[in-house]
Image 1: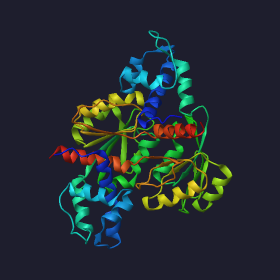
Image 2: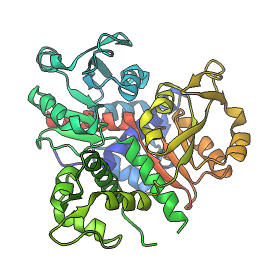
Image 3: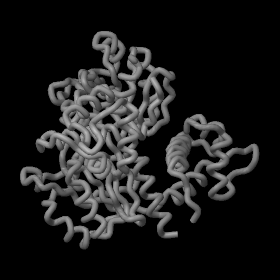
Image 4: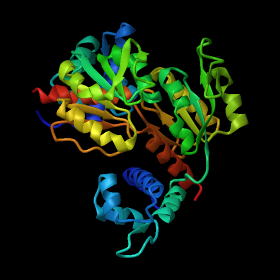
Length: 208
Length: 208
């Protein structure tokens, strides 16, 4: 399969959101211009992004909302459900576990872990926090698709390596540390503190 | 001031974290190689990043940990505190409000808002959720530096516009919607669902 840029995948995700809104509103077709406006891009970009995955709609009639939505869910791998493990049950980890948006889009948290005895046993949306010592055994038993790392920076690489050894092929990393993973493992980083610091840098620069 | 790439700013944030760890451990100097290893980059890149902001350390002796840390905090605008408002008090918004890492790095949440009467009045780490109808008045009274948007996608642009009208110059957006803001407003986007969908796309592509 040809390599698709991350920025294209992000736009496909946004198009899909708007298509689902249009579907709820009962619209049968949507123009590339409308998708572009909602996706913060141009209609030429929308046509380019979508033509890449085959032929949709008819010239002048716009895209068929339901059909294009189904196709985008297929492309994005969202026609199935995914099993997640969350390592780290602090404020952010436990908020993720309770975030309904994940489940709505097909991401089910099957296990949570922490190394703090005070957190082990707590329930978040029906999922109990387990001792991180059990991680390897649970990975073998549950075969999750995605590992979410929400531990302090200095523990993140070791957790990533355990996830990879356990067969996880996709990692979402919230720890403030750059992780090394094998080429066949997909890695996305989300770092709230770094984003805030990028804003403080911008604010400080504005005053120069 | 010369334009600095976002990727450089991210690395500076990571270097600062490691310098603070080294300082805690009592190390007086650190090599560019050590910073590179911890920052997931090369020592040439470290030297390039730092030389951009002036001259540090002496050849062969490495960088002075405390001095470089202070300088990076200055560059990143972290020698002062910032005042944040959080719009949206759902699971993610309330987790952010309770996340101690923000306060530790100088980001204080001064107000939270929601349009759900059930959430108004709730306290998160001493900050009460207010009715979003009060947003404009609070912006005028509190003059916050940064606005954090944690509302549904279809409400995000309107919230951004109110923040901008209220004088906010930096926005951290968690909503799954591309926002339009004036050029003098800094915008960073964090979207958990889109990151997960990028992973599901990668997992789906692996099977092709």
